[in-house]
Image 1 (tube, rainbow, N blue to C red):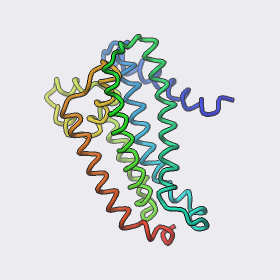
Image 2: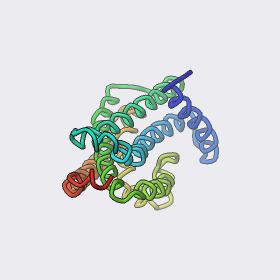
Image 3: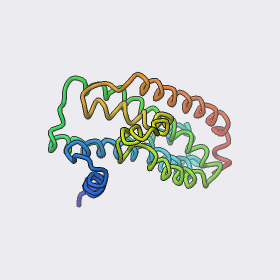
Length: 229
């Protein structure tokens, strides 16, 4: 009955369950922790979908690729649009949480626009990379899923980065490019101010590395895709 609304319902229930439990375990004020958690889960869900679901872009399109002479990037963009639309629906959960907890909004929230653009670019590169690699090595997305589970717990998605900084473990956070991607979206949405210069520099560098890797992967596999399916 709800259709795509189930995507939003699932996220809202996850936010309530995880937010209340972890908020109390970590001694956080729910008025600030729930919006913080919501942004983190939305961004992480997008990155996860770009890798896991995007990794199936070519395998799932095998019938079309073998019968229709369309460019391979059409199938890449198809899955990228799919995960982006899901992320946009999930973002509505943040709007709801922000309204309930009265997150202050100012002109600084517009800094989230370049953040979302960089996140989208990163997602597109991830879909491209894993769609091609998974066509050659069918266990690639499974291995990536295991790695994402580990990264989830060492990335400030459900816990504030300040908790590690207070324990002199800041390097775990600062060396993680996914943390910087989170910050360039979190800071504008939560405090209406831009992230640090370091966040933007690391985020851009990470996207650039992924872009180069994606170009190499496409050059290596694009002409052999139909034979690998």
